[in-house]
Length: 603
Image (cartoon, rainbow, N blue to C red):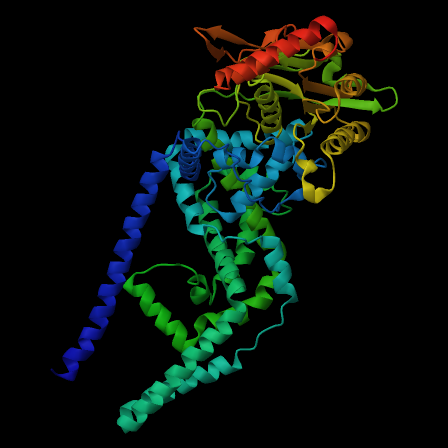
């Protein structure tokens, strides 16, 4: 075979590899577009997969007759624009409301910036209308412009995510990192070209020299790359973000671009910011390929180039100073991507819901903290009302409605497993979603801007904490009382089985006084209890509601409907019978309870 034919085959092979790589990328994009269209109106795929895995786990445990305890979702790191509001949902409230699961249900984000922005937004309830309504125009645009939304999602998917990366931490770490000088890498390139020349001129001896240089270059590459790999991946992500930010800017409607600039607090136009960031695109091709993860022949060819000539390491060294100089613009770009991705996620979430509403939120101020008088906007107290609300994590929820009387809280009584705790969480989660993503899972909702606290479990009573169940409860309740004194907005708190960790007499006495102290207008309390005595002690301060069950053909059935009034029966012993306890145990328990109710003492 002549050398001419051989030389002609080399560019032909490279062209074939290039075309195959382009075809594979095109196929990948078409599948991605089809996936975005398919999941419009459905829960996120990762949420569906998690629920399916959870169902399998529950079924397996039920077969073993063991109680499912579940596992706590790993807490995500809070990042992004922490200055969105002055109040932050505390960790106790976040965990007790299962907000990691709620976040997983509404998280359609495709970029790291979007995930961080949305997660942070859910921790920072809005305190005024401007903050609460900031999503409306952008989310509504993506709900009504399918083609544009999918195109934006494609660009966001190209940006992607880097597990464990927080933009602010990366920029801070890079600022402290010692500047790298790639002198050794440039010498290695010269050695490679010299070795190729020697192989062509000297034959066997030159070929040995070439192999030796290649081995040294490969070993040196992996050693140097290992030291900067985390930064290399993060910079590759940032560069991809900058590249796609320009594309996003070009694709966005002018009004949406204005909304974007206003909501991320930019002191300059997005176009001007992108112009300054363009310098990062120069001489950054090889860094951007880091972590691409493609298995195409073209990508494999690029891997060999990197190992022999170290172009990504050389470009990394050149980009260090540039990134430090453009830190402000990078942060702005990151926030723009985050807001846009979060807005798309909110639009996708709304389209997946069978029912939702845009809540009516109004500001309530307390000009005189000692007097405790609130003045609603327009001299009108609109109160709290939610119609046919449901919980976001239930597959077949029962909707309930409630309206607060002026100056009153809500006291829930009722049977075990009848829905009290779920109702408390339903109201609390909807109140939080209303003030964060301006969405409520209800037909209608009117509420004041407020701060949200919960005291629902005794998780603080674990052995490692050194605290008893009662101590954990009273500390949790005290944090609510302290928060109410400091807040200039009303505090809505949700208390489940108050002071369950102590005896009956002291529990009722202490519970009554604590709940009396949680009074409107400064504080509004939704409390659930099994102590029916509290309904009489607190009838002036709290509206009474209850849940109950029905017995049909020996089976206990729950309607999960909220009823006005007080519960007149308990079902703890009935539940023992329903789940199959020995009849002797059930009958003795009934007799013991009946004797106490008649004689006032236990036997």
